[in-house]
Image (cartoon, rainbow, N blue to C red; front, top):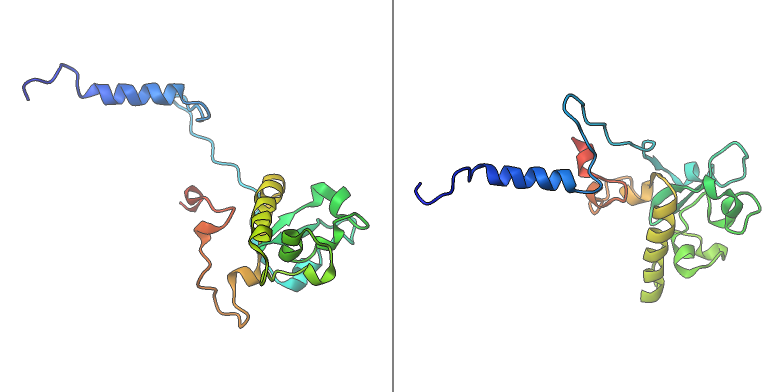
Length: 172
């Protein structure tokens, strides 16, 4: 292999070591230390409508849950907004996707059904879902409707990798 500079095999390794040493946000692992496992939140679970209704903020010692887009969030830390008698308590204990999209507390809008929503309402839904609920509140589960069809058969459109909590590295 004429023409190659001495030590050419070591240059890529040296470059990689430099990148790893200078990269911000990467956990530092020193010789003889085992890497720390990623922190996990509480396990997620599947909620029927009846089960989710138990977490509507009526009981002082119960967490407060609400679902948006079939994703169940623990909003207990926002008790002043979602607790009993609070302004957004009507959203709790159910999948209130339509109400969130329309910015409505009308009981007719407190449903999972997004049929007939405008493009602007759907955009608002995605924005609030991402910037409010996913950003501020832990995911504790999914509604059964997100994973199962009405007859109890699996929803073939459900893909774990598309779920907000899913991280492929947690699967191995």
